[in-house]
Length: 371
Ligand SMILES: Cc1ncc(COP(=O)(O)O)c(C=O)c1O
Image (tube, protein in one colour):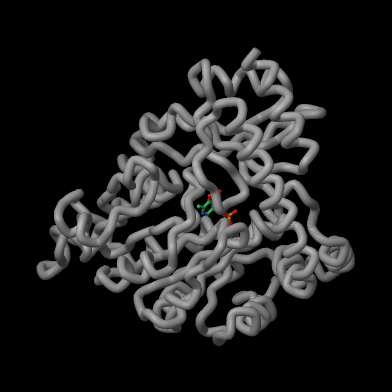
């Protein structure tokens, strides 16, 4: 039997998520995956090093209890409001599995099920993992365009048309948005959340670089969850720790379906130590925001169109050549940025905010390319 027949047709046809490149080229300035340019704090590195001993033979705490206790204190909630995952990617996947019916079930198996029970909804452009998660689950995707400047369409406009589903089983809202960088006002998000009858996940992966966050919505509205990560603002991509905040009923449902030991032990140690050293990280947020503002000014002066960003990256339309050519021209100068082929963003480059020296090298390379 050919191997392909052993694989589910859904998986066979799936377009998998494509992560940003992680090349091992010496001297490369890596501005392509929104990693933090600053290392974890010395206290975090020491805590991880101290945990590497014979205890590695033991299973870690199955629900990341110590970390959830600390997060509960930080966010003014209970540990029952929290689920920790293997990066926020895992908690986003759990939300799809926990709240969305595969389309076949919604239409055939459960007589009373409405098609919206199978809908995963999101705006475009936003995080390109959402459609993949929907496809893996056999759910129905509902992708609705943001306004041309990547702002959120108002409630009245969504009600008038655009095919927005107010009954969607699960809606992802990315704030600040990726790859656009815009942050959305909590008041605006609240209106949309209150109008949704299914679960809403506010994906706040970049929120520490933004002017406001919407955590209070997850702690007051029963169908709203907030997803956060230690990857971006807390320099811990390598350790894979993210979490969801929300109503204990929704959180308990997802605890039932996660892997027993879904967060590795060193990740738990690192994340807990991070929460003991927030001053260090808050200073880094300020440095990154200052570099973001400097880079915005410099690129604008070189006639790049730079979208307003509240994240640790800029989405920018370069002058002179197609963005895909810029990608290569920058790579030739050992600077790696990100380009997406999706029609809404194909004219743009996404540039992660690095150190001031990395940003200066990027501006220098851009000047040379413009000449
Ligand atoms: C919007 C958004 N959400 C979630 C993630 C996932 O982060 P992690 O799985 O590293 O926590 C990313 C990573 O790029 C992202 O851009």
